[in-house]
Length: 295
Image (cartoon, rainbow, N blue to C red; front, side, top):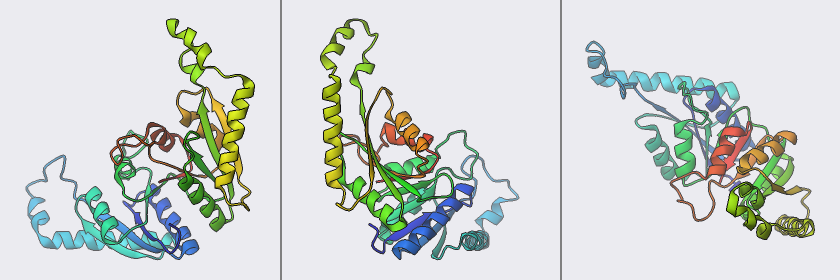
C-alpha cells in the first residue's frame, strides 16, 4: 500500500479538506506517491430554482468555464499554502460519482478527505465522508484536524485480529518513526444482561473467573505479538470493557495516550459489506479527534 501509491485527496475548500491536503503532502514525501487533487464544482440549484435573471448565465457555457477557472485557481492556492505537489483535477458534476470515477480511472490506492465539508451541517460526520467510507473500494483517511503521525494505534477485533490492520499500522509507524500501539477490547458479556430479570441467572453461566479472563488476555497479546515483526517495539493493550459501545472505551484509551492517528476496519465480517459503516467505526469517526484510516 505504501510503495509509491496513487493518492486521491478531495477538497471542497473547507478547513477539514485543507487538513487532508497537508496529510497528502506528508504521505507523498514519505512514500514517493503520485497525488491527484480533486475539486468538484457544484452550482447550488438542487434545492431551489435559479432566478430568471440567473438562468441564462447558467445555461451559457462561458459560465461553466469561468466557474472551473476560478475553482482551479483557488485549489492551486490552497495546495501552495500547505506545500502540496500534485496533479490538479477540477470538474463539474456530482461529487460522489466524480470521486468514484477518479478512483477507478487513476488506479487510486488511498483516498484522503475531510471529516466534514464546507456546508454548515448539524451532523458531526459529513454525509459525503460517510458515503465514501462505506462504499470506497480503497482505504479512506479521514482528517478532522492537522494530521500527526507521532503516535499511531491499530484498533483490532480481538476475536479476529486482522493482520492487515497490524501490518498497515506497523508500516506507517516505521515510515514516520512513530510510537505504535495495538489496541484490542473484549466486551464483558456480563454487563449486557445485568438487571434483566430472568436473564440474570444466565450471567453466572457467562462469567469467567479472573484467572480465566487473564488467560484469554494473555493469549490474545501473544497472538498479536506473533503477527508483528520480530523487531517491533509496539505497545500491546488488550482489555475487557464494560462499555456496551466499544468506541467509547477505545476513544478514552487513545485520548489518555495522546494518540493522534488510528487505523481500523470499516465493519466486521458478516456485515452488509460495501454498503454500511460498522457501528463502532462510525462512532469512532464521531468521537476520535485525530485522523482515522479506515481499511
